[in-house]
Image (tube, rainbow, N blue to C red; front, side, top):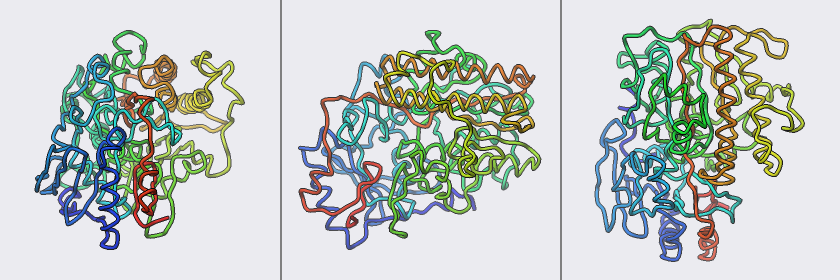
Length: 511
């Protein structure tokens, strides 16, 4: 039996009887008209079904079988908040700019039923998952002009380009999800299947995007993945077309570009989706639920998305989870794989964060001054831009060193699988919003760093035998700085006791 066939028909986590009254009171507060500007909708699981509730209506649904579309609606009242699940809404960039801050009645939520269900498949899921509106500015909670986290299409849409040996060329409108990336990479490389159904990773939720693979061409000997964290797909694609991202454009020309990107898993945040990309499992199935959550079983808050915890984030994955590094080693035991600046490093032979775990930190430049591919206009006034520029410079040093065969006095063989994570795009798009000049500068700097990796591959003669994946872990949406507020204040004024983790994961009755 496959993992998909074994998915639970009813939610694993449900609101406990002792919290049912609190859940009703919390929903009354969250769905009060006063919070309509900042609360888009609320997800929960009760009475053996999943629910999405908004100020305009609600829908209850349940899983009927395997696959992201195998759900049936039990009942609905008012306007169904998940009625539009189109992946093509607000694309290309002009369409997004013409519809900034869309309300739920004009927004789209691709694969929404599956998005909600996978979250509540985890026993550590929250009682209520609050989704902020597209317009909501998180400044009261330390937020930015650009935000994500919602299953709304702009925040969920990550760019996706698959290129190089073994890949067809051209644009494709095939709907894709980030959970499809790992199975597709495994198929492209020729990873041995685990079973007769062709599953390449244990418990995989994603499918192979066969539409972009060329079965008539020899498989690549190597695959290089590059992640531009937090990048708005429409913005990146527009910059490719305008000539501002020439190295991404090179990959676009030699591969398949997903016009509507790939949909990130709920919640559309960093650590949850980095792990989804590299394991082929949804957050509710691999165990990294959010950047922060609460585990009632241990009574502990789990924080993964901080400089102090990133190196150890993968200790929270559930048993049986394997990464692409593991899959490569299962097929080719002597193969060398590398994970550069990537917290999901399960099974990698080389890992940036393994240095940190050992207390042997790679040399970090004291400042970004004089570093190549660094926009001085923003690196000086912006602390986040400055730090991410330093981190991404280190990533290039490591990736290029590995490809050249030597880094920090150690020799390395040619990697069959190399994964590189760049963080600057997330910093720039958060700070100024995805349509700002600082965001564009972050893309240009990151594109230039990508160019260093491509040149290294050419220098060592690997380029023509390599496939590439370029993507992000989620999208980024510009909010309205005038739409502010904190639902926690209203909940506490109503006398409710709860934990709000990661902003939006409510655990009732906990303090």
